[in-house]
Structures are given as structure tokens and as C-alpha cells.
Image (cartoon, rainbow, N blue to C red; front, side, top):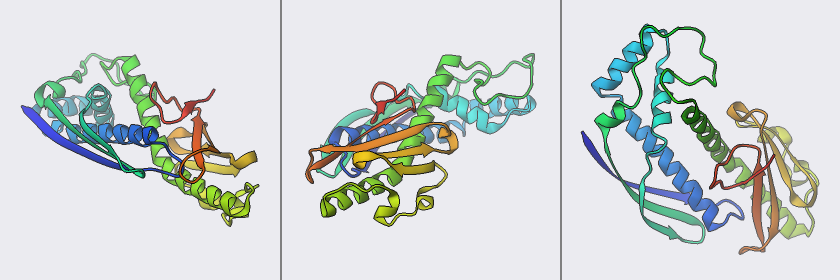
Length: 244
């Protein structure tokens, strides 16, 4: 069964973000949304249902099966047909064509002779290449980091406004009228200011143990641009620098 999709994605720039940073994030999010759409179509096929039954018989969850499929869909990319930058948002247009039946058969049916036991969170599903599973896990980390950026963008804006109005950098979140606990959510464990406008976040949830640091540099429309680094594996085209 052939499927053809026309795709579009609009992503707004956060405080001090460059065109490349915003458009890279837009493409990443478009690709992730494509994979979710493909999975919803695959789930209606007979091939998917056969694998669902096999997983159930081995006491494996359907969520693990869905992740197995998503890991196999990582190489499926939209073909960009247009990119437009307005100064504050990036708009992408793309197309995608695929054979759904072929995609539905990418995940192997687990053999009944395979040993069944507790599944470690980092262990790949039956028949899934460990390296592919590792790359998939890294991509989900990057997605979780991108979702945390809504909070990061707000904090960047408030830091910039504080500096532009007072001529100095805030020494703490409290200086800007922000209680540290206001920043804490399912993705952020702790946020605090360092010197010269640098903001550090300890991440939570899937990214527990990772950190994100962002800092201002001269440039941009308002005289400031923002850069960032993170311990999350960003891959070759990440929107933040890789930190140790």
C-alpha cells in the first residue's frame, strides 16, 4: 500500500535563536511527527496485528512493539520542498512517499523459542539491532530536550529584558521575580543563574542526570544572541553544542 503525504511545519524562534537553530528544530519535529503518523497507519495493518499478538504471547507490552517500529522508522525522512524564514519563524514544506506494507514488515516477529524475562529499559526488542536501538534512544533524548526549550526560551527572554533595562545581569532567578520552584516541571529538575547571564538547568524525567547550559553573546536584532551546550547526545546536526 503506497502512501503520499504533503507536510508543513512552522516553528517560532526563541529568544536570541538563529535561523539555522530554529529550522533545524522544525525539521526534527516534522520528522518525529511523520514517524508518529506512519505508526498510526502501520498499526491498522495485518502485519502489525500479527506482531502485536506475538508480543502479547511473550508477555511483552504493545508500547515496546510501538517503540520497535519507531526505531525502524528513524531512517524515514521527509523530502524538503521549501523553507522560508520570516525573521521570527521558520516554515518548512516537504513531501513523503512510502510503501506501508514494507514498513509494517520491518519489525521481526519474535520467535516463540526466545527466552522471556524482564526487559531492561536499554535492551532492544527482539530482532532489533542494538545500534539502531541506541540511535533511537538518543533521538528520543533530543526530542525531550527540544520540548524543554519552551521554558528555556521564556527564561532567556526575561534575562535579556533584565539586562537591557538595568545594564547588568541577574545574579539569580529571584532578581527577575522568578521563584526557582516555578521553573521545575517534568523536564526540568533545577534552574539557576551563573555569571554574565549564563543559565544552567539540571534536567528531569527521561533526561535525568543531564544538563543544559545557555549563555548570551553580542549580536542579533536586540544586540544579544543565545548559544547553548548540553550533555544530551545531539548528533551531527544538534541545535546545541555537545558538552562532556
